[in-house]
Image (cartoon, rainbow over all chains, first blue to last red; front, side, top):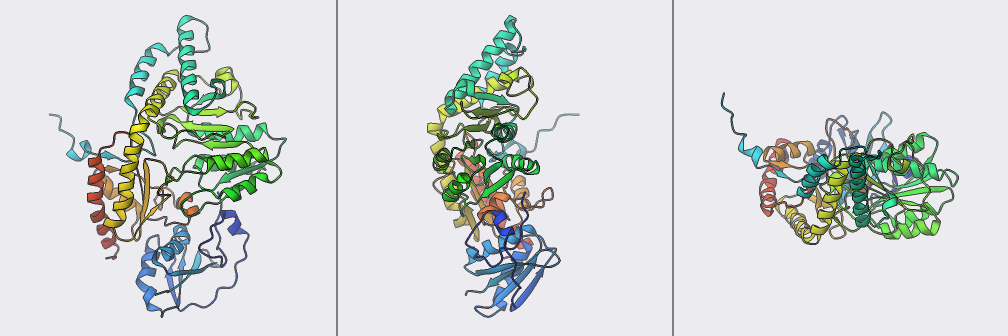
Length: 106
Length: 389
């Protein structure tokens, strides 16, 4: 089985063989307007937290969701697609888990 | 003490998990009972009862071969579909050792394929995984490119996905494999008995309990001319391909179920497919924030999968169970496996709140009505318990 890493800024729309993800470098994480700490929380809780708080940031603002449930890695970008918000990028966190950046589109 | 009747809910459970296992077909039950009496002896011996067992075994082999589009001498019976896949993958890699060590698999294959691939990798082989699109369909161009690389010994592709029902482009991939001179193993576990087996395979694996036969019977067909060497120690069974005493009664029952199932499918397939269409249409209308996944058209007749946002999958299945529905999920944010479904993950769709409805032969329309009636309130209650309204 494969291990997952961040997609390193790749578009949420491109799906690659999971190994392909491993080879990509993780760029430095840029600033976000709001950080949601969902570390240690199981899905769907991180997504519920995101849905509750996305409107806290201004239009075009970026929410960073910190999560370590493996489901969040797939489910937050999927939520963005379903809800027409933008999955900007996913970054590895130094202590495990990811910072998943979501842009408020409306 | 007087016996108490079982609770009503037990008696009215709607079984909607055919993709896990199809209930035993009546034709299989009948064949099984007969063969337990007529086919119990050792088919490898020479006396009358043994020859009768051998005859029943040969007859079952010929029937299965005809339906899957193989020659009888290409077909072996295994002790499960998983064993058929494992030995299909590892045996072909072994037979083609001199051609190379590269194995190409589709990302959403059944775990039996991926587990065999892990063994190959552990033993020093190379595995390339080809991705899928949002519907779960393998990327044909990427697959063609992957098999054309030098040193490719085998490629694996399922006929249809077991979690979301999407049909795979087997014929196109088979053409690409043929052009590259690479054998293609096709895992037909979810479609055998329901849809014709697409042509072009070199190795074919299937599982009897998925088509209404008994558990414990798998099928492995290896095309004449495909190099394959058993990964097991040999004995005189199954033309030295699979060791161990054959379960002749179960194999006879498996063949009877496949024959009956294939004959019924012209009527039953479209009926189940229409019920699936109805679920695909109604669920998003009745339940907010639901994504129905998999290909809406190029799909198996009996599987439909959807994911509900903001719902924990295990809670959903537990509540459905309490309401009298035996249903499973592709996703598994469950206690037993902490990883989400590799299928949903590779597709890039929601992995939580996932429900796979798979309709067995003869399912009543009333069961589907009742499912659609109870689902909205169950989802609403679970969301409310998490503070989502």
